[in-house]
Length: 353
Image (cartoon, rainbow, N blue to C red; front, side, top):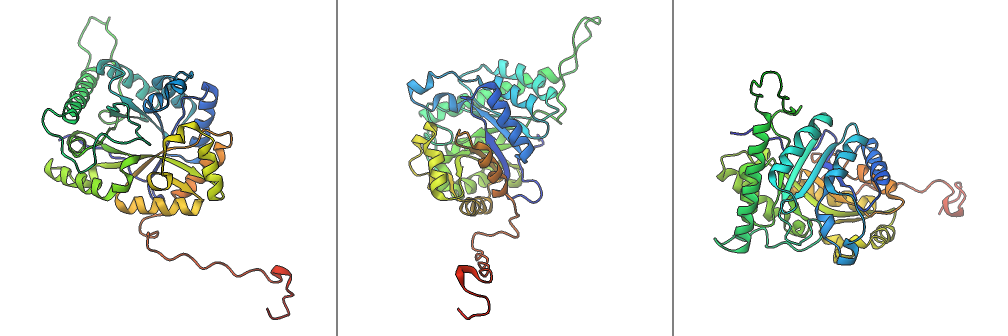
């Protein structure tokens, strides 16, 4: 059986923290944000095809970086963070992806991860899924056909990668040896799961399952389905990473968090950010992360507002995931507020209140 490498939180963190880079930025700005994240301690940087197609037609015409170009740029600008690509299977043939993966994985020092999805016009992080997490795909239905396409695509990529990693045949010294990945086996890969059938596919073949933001309210049911699928595939549940891709906006006040989100047109389709995303003050956002971590989520892929002060959001993102599940629990009472300093409010310390 294939050895899996699921995304897990490093010591002292509730979940693994990822940020989705915005391809609407210039190469210089994208590189700058990637460096900020790398130095601030973000665990993984992602580029998603989803952001290419999730806006209105007018906005989609705006210039932006191609996904794989942005991934390469992020790899160059960083030294520690993992680098990931969330790829729409309709945009590239599997042979092309398999040809791109080994050299980038090698040049990045084995930091590459990949994720596959058939978006069908829906947003990974903000739109409606093609079906609920508990639904079953009937044979011949659109969902079942989409799932067949996804499985065929993933199988083809893995076959091409295995072929490129095979020892080069003797060509009389004229053949070049294929690029070898520093990672043991293929780079970790995930599958975006809209339905129960997609969850079952991920449990059979993927390192991670990625749940879209629209399924966040049903996270417990989706994770229970994933664990049952692992059991059916003869796999330990803990060998499957549980990732969610969702919008995140943090501020010193809830009003600041919402103002940052409203300033970015990409967030206009998020009808209830508090329900499907992580919004509010640092304390409110950490409380939400604690809930997700205890539900079984191991990996966050955060879409943050593309604002000039994004560095402030990045700093608070890293603080949001600090802690452990053993110490921080959703039902834990809040710490008592500290006493006011002596003389606070104009009262003399030697006089009673």
